[in-house]
Image (cartoon, rainbow, N blue to C red; front, side):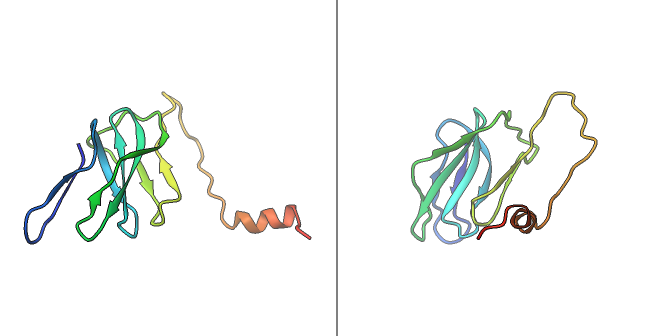
Length: 114
């Protein structure tokens, strides 16, 4: 399960996940927490007030991940809008990994907007 526990002052504990979960990650503003549920769903939990009281977990999307207790299988940007997910394709070998920078500028050149 995923828990929030205060480190200072009075000990406050909040259970975040309800049916198993791990690999929690904060949104940059700490108003939302993400975690990977036991069934591989990526969950989002709103956090309220200074005590960061968790709201109801909601499924953002399903993944084909089998959650690992020892490996980070996803990352989230600070604004919570983009996720990078490790995805296993069996025994497939990746021979190249391409990163396209400034793709929006290239798109504007290919499809001009008047």
